[in-house]
Amino acid sequence: VSRSYEDCYTLFPTPAAWFTGPKGARWSETLGAIRAPAPFECLLFSGFALYGLVLAACVHLPLMDRGKRPALWPVAAAALVTAALWVLLTFATSQTGESLWRVARLIPGGDAIRVVSRVYVTVYLFGTLGALVWLSAALERAKRGWALCVLAPGLALLNMFPMPNIANV
Image (cartoon, rainbow, N blue to C red):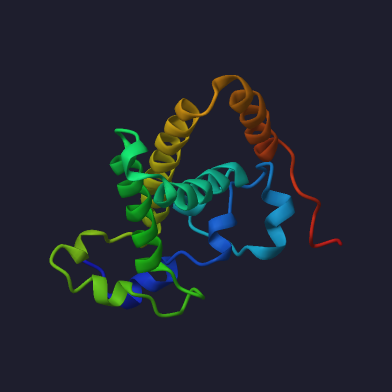
């Protein structure tokens, strides 16, 4: 069973949807002004810490010296590239916009994903895997004492405290 492109495009990830969390979550009220209602599969946003880790991994991984790369460097790089490709293939500027998914469906097996909104889950899983493998390798290379004292509280604070409500500013 497959869906036509027209059946899928209302479920594509939009820029605002990447900041849509469950109702009542810590960031729900703060980001409510910039997001639209989304299917339940899309309510995964839990804070900016994960996005910060993914961004840091994407910047740092390519800059690592080939001789000093950890054994799991290919795993982190592959996971982050996979997440980025899924975002690129399904990204639409609006719920009725075009995306590369129209072309990706022509590739053998492209019709296998019928519920495009589950791309959020795929991106979060691969992005989280890549970021955590990178973080583990980065902490192994750093002097454990100062790195853990600086990074651990910083990452915890990123997810704990919401930003001011930008709708009321």
